[in-house]
Image (cartoon, rainbow, N blue to C red; front, side, top):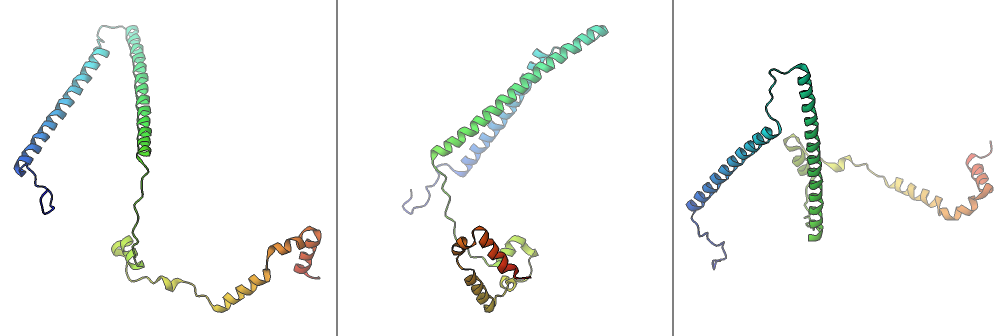
Length: 189
C-alpha cells in the first residue's frame, strides 16, 4: 500500500489489460462455437444410430403398417426415457436447493441490517409515490374528526355506571338474575 493509504496501483498497464480482455473474449467465443458444433455432431450421430433412414419404395401396405407400428413403439420408448430424465433432473434440482438451504443455515443466521429512521412528510411521500401527478399539499390533520370535551365526559360517566362485571356475575346468575334483567330493561307494561 502507498503511505497515503490509497489503493495500490496496478502493475499491468491499461493497454495490456485491454489486450488480455480481448484475448479472453475471443477464446471464449471460439470455445462457444466449438461447443455448438460438437452438440450438432452429437445430435446427428445419435439420430443416425437410433433412427436409420427410411426406405419406403417398394413396400406393401402391410409392411408399411408394420413399420409404422414399430416406429410408434420406438417413440413410446423414447418418451419413457425423456420422462425418466426429466424426473431425475427435477429431483436433483430439488436436492440442490435443499442443500443450498442447509448451507445457509449452517453458515449462520442472516442478520437483518438496522434500518435508519427517515422523516418524510406526507407531501414528500406522495410525490415519491405518485411522481409528477401529485399536486398541492395534503394536510392530513384537516381530515381528522374533532373531539369535543363534553363527549369525553359523557364516555367517562357511562363507563363508571357499568362498573366491574365480576361483581354482577353472581347477582345475574340463575333465573332470578335473568328475571331482574328483564324487569329492569322492559319495565311494567
